[in-house]
Length: 212
Image 1 (cartoon, rainbow, N blue to C red):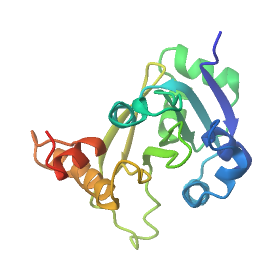
Image 2: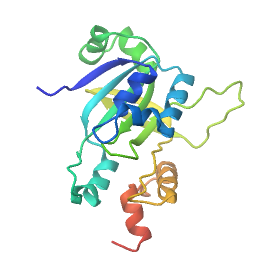
Image 3: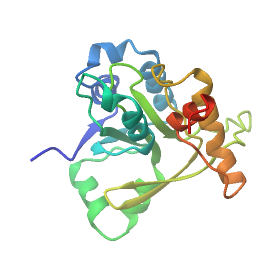
Image 4: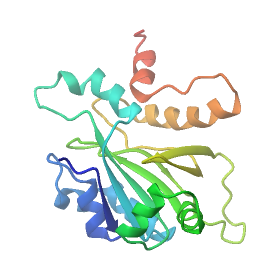
């Protein structure tokens, strides 16, 4: 039976291992600037434990997959991994109680410690997919984050919420750098102006090229 998830202590080695895939191994991830930045960022916001959700279907990557990767000679996977980060230490027994028992103090404790998630794409580059993480602390109001919105995540039936703005690593085989910037901007405008679209990167590229 395929592994559904794994529970990991937050360390640099575990993070790089969990982001890696058969086209981009742990050593390559350890040299990846985005992965290195993520480790520093997650350390700063207090990550202690993370859950790796296997065989996750990410809508943004799935559209990229059907637009390009499904037609490649290599057999790229269409499903990703999703890494969920928490600011609390907990073991397997506590995690199983969290996802199977009715809400209680443990549920509230872990839900409140949720720091967000990172989608790991099964690619040789541009591994860091849709990422939604808690912002830095306000630092006595020195930092202000006005362009954020509420996101809902579902971890094995458990609803989790995070206030942030989504970002992802640019995939140069599909899009220019402006594509991801527009994608992030549309994440916010779609919540500000109800009914306006939030197109995926592959769709933004098609529209920019005049392809419908």
